[in-house]
Amino acid sequence: MNDDRTRIIHRRTPESAAMVANVKRAMSITAALNRLTFDDADGIRALFSELIGKKVDESFSQIPPFYTAGGNEIRIGHNVFINQNCTFYDLGGLDIADDVMIGPNVNIITTGHPLDPAQRRTTTIGKPIVIERNVWIAAGATIIGGVTVGENSVVAAGSVVTRDVPPNTLVGGNPAQIIRSIGDD
Image (cartoon, rainbow, N blue to C red; front, side, top):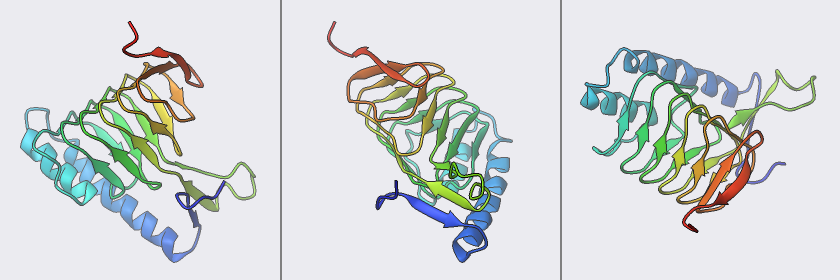
């Protein structure tokens, strides 16, 4: 599907060269970030701000290490917590709203490649991910491009989210399925 939110970059184009340059920039910044300890909250916020190209709020907290293939397409709200060893591939755009908690070893991947073997190495496809307010993404979950995780929802540990999660919902499994509504008890 190629809607107005999907970004397609072909190999050996100016867009591809810019993408590679941005990956190199992100690798340099994350290498410095990953040398910091959790005790250096100001240093982490400063480097994360440099990575995304916008100052993160004082309420932002992150435990290194952290990995990304770009960083400049990440938007972070207030009171966001990102645990250690997370990977965010943000070429398609990644919006993280206020009060989001992201557990360790979470992968948020907006990018992929065509299924056709002849095109896999020549094309990168980016689809946005939106994580709405007050979401908790538990340890080891993976979220795939094109997905919105609705407000107040929880993604269970180890889940693979391949389609939208409704607000106030617990999802789990591979692929993630609705387990139950939150707040009905």
